[in-house]
Amino acid sequence: MKYFNYILLIIFLMSCSDKTDKILPEEQVLTESVYASVTIQPDSLYQSYAIVSGILDANLVEEGDAVIKDEIIIQIINNTPKLNTQNSKLALDLAKQNYKGSAAILNSIKDEIEATRLKYKNDSINYYRQENLWKQNIGSKVQYDSKKLNYELSSNSLRLLQSKYTRTKNELETAVQQAQNNYLSALINTKDFAVKSKINGKVYALYKEPGEIVTTMEPLAAIGSTNNFIIELLVDEVDIVRIAKGQNILITLDAYNNEVFKGKVSKIYPKKDERNQTFLVEGVFNNAPPKLYPGLSGEANIVIAKRDNALTIPKTYLIDGSKVKTDDGIVTVETGLQSMEHVEILLGITKETYIHKPD
Image 1 (cartoon, rainbow, N blue to C red):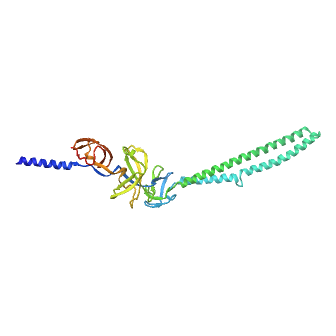
Image 2 (cartoon, helix red, strand yellow):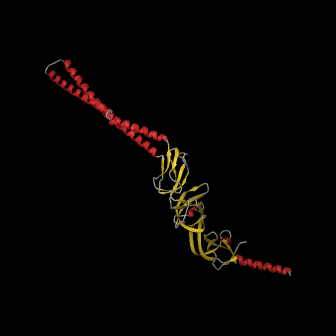
Image 3 (cartoon, helix red, strand yellow):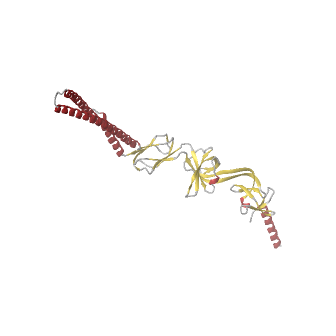
């Protein structure tokens, strides 16, 4: 009797097992997607650096403040540029004084030219007068030669002074221009101690406090868009070739439990991150959550393909990725789209074909 009951129990369990592990393919909507980890970041987010070194004098904004383009957000102090600016201004004033002032060098050369021109005129008159007398055999040869020599010397002196004037004028103009450039450069260096925002946005982080040393190698602030956020997705290298701009994204964020947000792929970065063997992909929300903060994390599925009325079976019923067990034995099938749990069957079985779960 006990043996008979045992046989009945085995038959019952086997029948239950057959009912449980034997199913028909099912027609349903099948969506194939690529998994990606998600981080939310403000659009146009950048780190602001100083282009000079010094001491941080004051943070003129706080985290969370809205800023406009070219607004000063951080003030740095350093006495050296101020001194350089003052010295450059003194040099510029001196150059201008030498060029245009009342005691300008050019004025003294002009006076020399005027005196030499008068002497040249007088020597010229005396020379031509003596030449005419000499032609009439009046006067001595010594007198004629003396007048001629004085005339030639005066002519050379006038020509040399005129050349000196032109050369000195060019040198002084160049000196004024160089001093002007040095002064403007010094002014720019002074203005560089005021760090400005490059965009209209929000201050998300300040990395230095007043009194700390500032270098050109360390960021001082993080600034990004106030309301526009982007979705940063890390996609495995084996899936990146299946990603394209415009594909739909289904996003879940840890901060919004059980809510699914929709977006689209907007940008694909072509360089692989060798550290984690992933590619960076950016997306935008169709309708963003009511509140977002930099660094919010979550998961996403990038929709690769979608098919209505696809003939599907659970993945657990596949054998070696391309076969199923039917009432007539092992059958080779052709698969199509795949989701996390189901796979589309294109050829090999129909919706009336019973399949068995492999042992």
